[in-house]
Structures are given as structure tokens and as C-alpha cells.
Image 1 (spheres, rainbow, N blue to C red):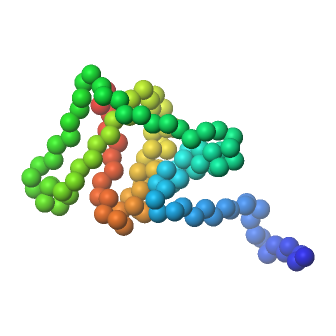
Image 2: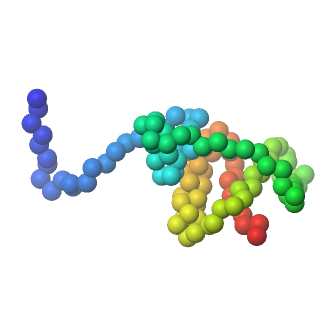
Image 3: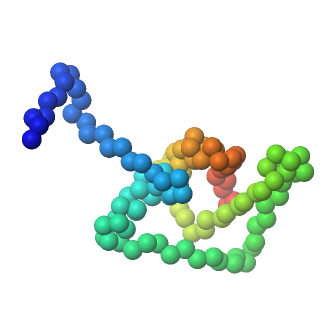
Length: 116
């Protein structure tokens, strides 16, 4: 066994490197990573998402000039969520990470808008 040697003045902080597969955007935020680990360890079950047809359907529109640049627009509404400052910051952090890494595959915009 090798003796562990620490350089003089080295930090005591342990840093973990997590490689995220290209198709697992849910693992790019802390909540998604923790959920993924708990599911892997069989400490909780995978979430089940369902499509709900609401009473007040929202629509997403794009201008013709924008359609030339971004021919596809996708919208999603998350209902029943209390957006606390911590959750909002986590969402913004995820948005930044997605822009840094997901934009490589031409995902041009990811934005949070309150529809309250």
C-alpha cells in the first residue's frame, strides 16, 4: 500500500469529480444528483411524472423572425411548487450549467418565468 502524502499547505477539503452522461441533464444540479444517488442506492424510488391537462392551458408563441433562428420552441409549466429563495437560486444555477454544457447541442434558451 502506498503511504498518503499531502503537500505542504494543501487543503484538507475533499473534492469529488462526477462525470455526467450526455443524456442525464437531471444530474447537473445538486438535487438531481442526490436523487440519482438515492435511487441508485435503493433508498428511494424513482419519481413518476404525469401529464396533466389543466383548466387554464397556456400557449407559447414565437415571432417569425425568431423561428428562422430557433425553429422549435418547447414550453413546460411546473405547478404546485413553492419557489423559495433557495429553490430559485438552485434553478438559476441549473440554468447556468445547462447554458454552459447543453448549449453545445444547440439548446439556445432555458428560462424561468413566473406565471402567477
